[in-house]
Image 1 (cartoon, helix red, strand yellow):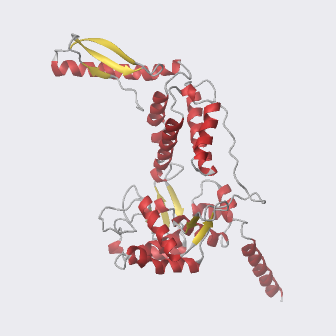
Image 2 (image 1 turned 30 degrees about the horizontal axis):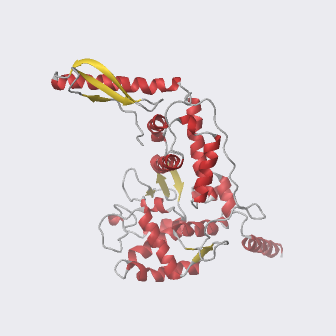
Image 3 (image 1 turned 90 degrees about the vertical axis):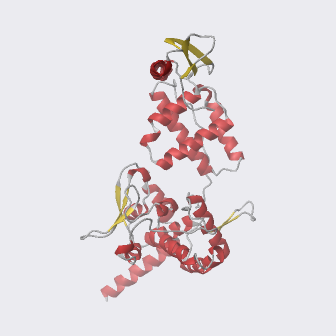
Length: 392
């Protein structure tokens, strides 16, 4: 499907003037309109026709709001991608594109009004049948709801359709389980020793350093690959003359789409300071590929290699209860989970939220606070024994 309204200047042998053609955003049919510019008037004539085409294109886009719901899906998607997506984080824009592509593959809507209650429910069921997790379905529906809410505000749609409820599997305590789990220090060390078997002896030091960085920083995989020493527009560690080291995250890489200064865990700051000042240029983590390709590895490639290391080390983090043959080995995100669990025992939830860069404290509380009874009990006994010792 085309996702843009385009008014094109065309020339026909049986017409004396330039013609304008476009796809009607309401009917979806091709339309043609003549101009008064002779088709023999050369470049100047074509340039004048192109200006008229641009004005007509804008008028069509503006007038599409006169027909709530009847605007084509293509025209709606174009406007949303032109007017809303540029103001969001890049990763959010990518997710929106994924949702739109799934909508078109499953529902193939001609008009915006085709995305109604029944079709949305069908869409959720179809994605579920393809094996998507309930959290993924919920995310897709949340993005679609935001898009249709905007359509209502812009008078492209009369009312927001009802959305199906997504039932998320919960334990008896109401806690939503992780897809993986925090790895232990012993498992982390096993993965370090397994690195050469996966990437080879030559590249092992770079990958071991990367795993160490993940263990100490709690960075998400994409964040770790965007970590630079000095590049404007990247995530950059800051070492002030006074005060503690921090992390600068630019708006384009931040969910809230705002520049942020965030804390760094002390051990990760010390890890970064091990690099001599003269070598602090470019990416913090330089990861060679197994095939010797000089291009920088992307997130998917890095994720696959880390998972292969977890598999080689035998670090199993999840077994599907319904299908025991479906297992998951340690991934980059399990390093982040381990980081969160360690620091949950050291600082308050609000501080942990900031250290983990969670958008909502609910995420912090759900996954990292109050979920480990033995750890909490141990902390209680330590506090009790300290109080007894102080009173003696």
